[in-house]
Amino acid sequence: MSFEALRQEVLSKIELLSSSVDLATKSILETTRAQTKILEAKFLSSTEESGPVAASFNEPDSSIKIEALNNSINAIETAIKNEINLIRIELSQIINSEPDVEKITAVMAREALQTRRQLRRHVTDTVRDSTRQVEAIAKLMPRLREVNPLIPPTGGFALDAQALLHLIDILERERPSVLVEFGGGTSTIWMAYICRKYNTRIISIDHLELYLGQTEREVARHGFSDMVECRLAPLEPLEIDGTEYSWYSLSTLSDLADVDFLFIDGPPESTGPNARRPAMHVMIEKLSSSAVVVLDDTHRESEQDTIRNWISAYSGFEVVDEHLSRLTVLAPKA
Image (cartoon, rainbow, N blue to C red; front, side, top):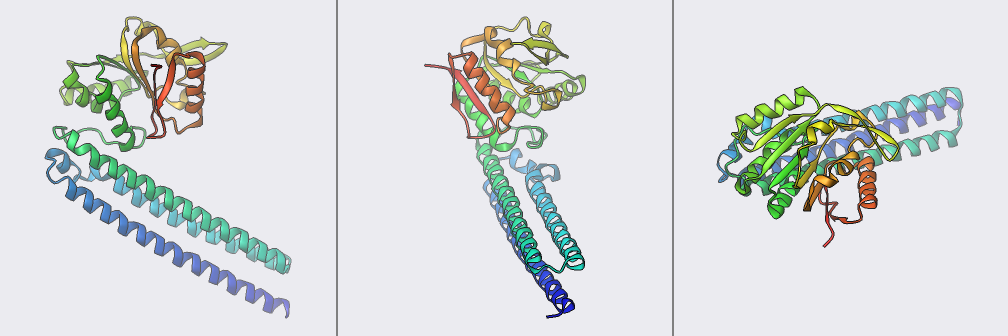
């Protein structure tokens, strides 16, 4: 076979491969969108009797989970098309520079396998996560019938629905009297709705006036100013075991005592390595004998390291809840 004939044959196979991947991608995306529509219909149907809460999910801002899924699907579609173009470019370069059939075949096989794996992983993870979030929101509805429809949305930097459901379970089990939260926002409002029946005092702490102001406005909007105190605590250098961290001003925390629920969702990861590690070291003397400690974002390796650090430093605590959501819960050993 002449080189030109070989070249044409390989290019034909590239086009066939591209068409096959395009067809498979389209089929998976169409199936995913159809399943999403079914989930959305079932969710809205199951919450028809949930009063203003159900109505709020008909608003554009409240359909964030479905919209996020569709955005993810579109991103996957774009990524796959880009992968196909890269395959075409790389193989064309090989063909034009070196007519090595074995090399061409190896590149085709490697790139095609990688593309299929990426597609399968992205679609599976996106569908699985979105399904869990929709299910979690549906489970929340019967427990929060009196929630104001203007409640801040879940997801993104805020707690997602699965973590929120987990947090509510813990609050209803523990019924705290004094709750301290590092990093306020959506979680502050949701916790207030649950804790008002327990007459809980909530102290929400932020390091930036912008974040604190947003939380204060939401607290007032939902009528929780009498039970939620928002405090500004700028970050300051703090050394623990020879390592320096940026942590909330200790003077702002000096009056805290008998805290029986500590929720840690700050400072942000961007403020430094292991940003939340000081929490237990600073608060250990301020906790009640039955205090529960909840750390957010423990799907991240840095937060898992923080949990291990706390367990090692404070042998009286143990992990009682993990892998149920992105929250990990510590409590005193029985």
